[in-house]
Amino acid sequence: MERRALANRWQSETWQPVAVVPDEPDAAPPRLILEDGERSHWLHPGFEIVLHRDEAEGYYLNLTAPQPYMFVMWRMEDDQAVPKLVTPSYHEAARLMDGGAQVDGVPLPAEIAPWLAEYVDANYRPEPKKRARPPSFKGARRDE
Image 1: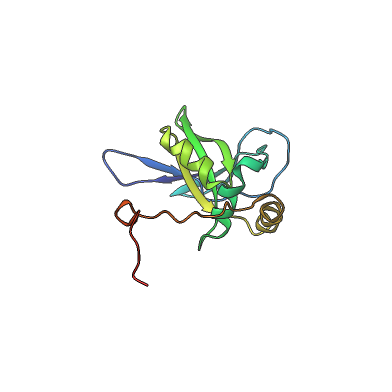
Image 2 (image 1 turned 120 degrees about the horizontal axis):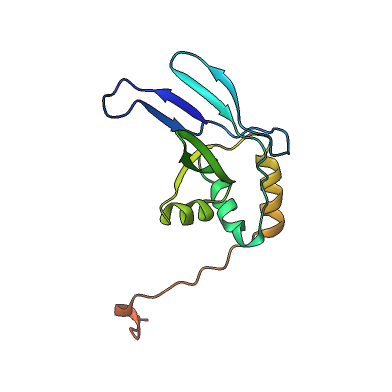
């Protein structure tokens, strides 16, 4: 998570996720990894990405987008932005946003993309599209 200082009389800083990176699998406490006069970066380890079959379409939509993302749901706690969930699913991110959560996307890490693509290939089968005829054409006959 990145904190950036602002020269603004209404808001002194802004927070946003900037990357998802592989790290230790344990739930170690967040740690400061970069700080200069204008910004600071905090690493929040311990997130696990678990893929679910019922989210396969959301993974597929993400992978086939011009820029695939990892979505980070986060909240402010005691003047610190804290990520709560990380997902590569468009659908899950949309549901979280619909529920009022703060969700931002960061570029999908290159080391995760092949793993996600393999899962999608094995688990996603698009449903065949049925062509719906507009009501105005129902019952109409074509000249032969």
